[in-house]
Length: 335
Image (cartoon, rainbow, N blue to C red; front, side, top):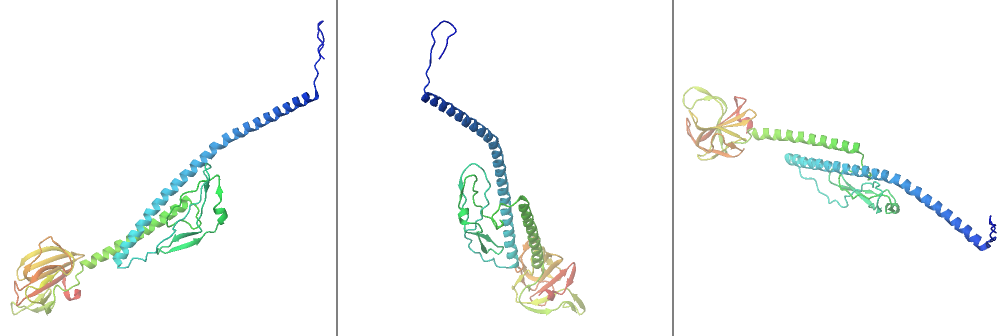
């Protein structure tokens, strides 16, 4: 009932029980709605704080993966250098290439790093393969559960499988320090192989520069040392050996070298002199014809002249001398 202050008539309002129930229900609904809106507001506000952090972690992980991939590419290049050096060393030593085994499933899966932005399935192969140094592939069993390995995860990004030779067997992303140690180990191996290759090349160079074959096929008619002179009744120091052979027989260089003289010398007739390096020099005299010129590079076994009897000679032969560090030595030591 409403009683006016003035003289107007009184008014009455009748509220039914149903109307009161509806009003109470409406108030409760509005109260619950307000609570829901408030909860959603604070939830959205907290997500706005978390998202930048997740984005930061995502960017850091992406940089780590890119850095790791760059390091893996560097390691691959060093592995190729080691393989090439090994081939050169084997070739220098006359060794056969190692047997190549066909490598199947030579794949190692790098452990996923969470990126928090898409759903991916992580599929790990049942067996993983690692090649050994001899080129033989060994299979490693997968220690994880098949069910958990193929489980779909909502907060992760599966990386593409990378194929390389020195990945740890547990399929975990190697730490930077481990990759650096691996690179240092490869560099040491490359340096060691390079030293071996240089040593082999030096020894091979000495071998090729050392007189080691007969200048021609024939019979020794005069030895190294003092002998009776064919031009006089006295004795003379014979600085080489005489090898008799038919006129025109090819005379060959007994080692690699460079021609330093090709012409006529008194008493020797047509002469070829070759400097081989490492202190070795050889002389070929009494030739009927010289076939090389001064400055020409020759190989061991290459024909450089033809046998003859020019100069002071009693018949067709080659006068062959070997000089070591400026002193004549007995050529028979090198035949």
